[in-house]
Amino acid sequence: MRSDGLASLDHETISDPSENICIRTGHNLRRLRTRRGYSLDRLAKVSGVSRAMLGQIETGKSSPTLNVLAKIAAALEVSCGSLIIEDEEPTTLLLNRSASKTLSSSDGRFETRALFPYDGDRTVEFYELRIAPHHAERAEAHRHGTVENLVVAEGTIEVVVGKQPYILGEGDALIFEADVPHVYRNMTGGPAIIYLVSTYREAIHI
Image (cartoon, one colour):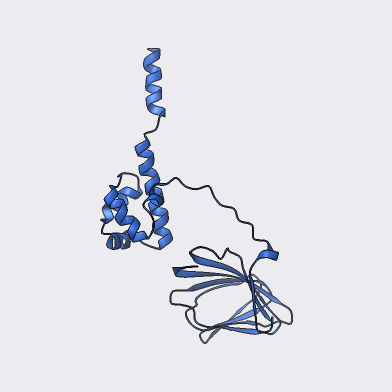
């Protein structure tokens, strides 16, 4: 009786390695697909793997063959190994102000500080903008699909999107499609600070 009980306990607690691989592959596929901005239908069309099969892989209900794995990896522009490797430990990155990349324009009246590492592919960028008193900074239209999300941390600014003006005070936020010319204007006698997130439809390659 005792040996049977121990055997039963071992059978229940020892996980199946193949099941772990299925779950891991599904998790990685979902992460890489969403990072690419693909729906299941879009990935099915690009990869030639049926939507039903992709759904089963993502939920860990099916283990893909090497051929299927290669098709998915090619469609996502990643290696086959990236679909089955274990998740890496979260990365923490400290960006000291003194070492951050700051760009100045208009005789120093407009400064942009990148709050992200410049290396690697990315679809999102985070900036701190500093605008001198009463200065207006004009930005050219970004590529199609670019969206800007900004919040005013200090001061009062006018944002002109195309020909439409918006007045924002401290704490106010604005989201707009930035594939048209736009202007940031500081309406006060003191410096204005804005935090800006730019989201791109396709990754920026560095």
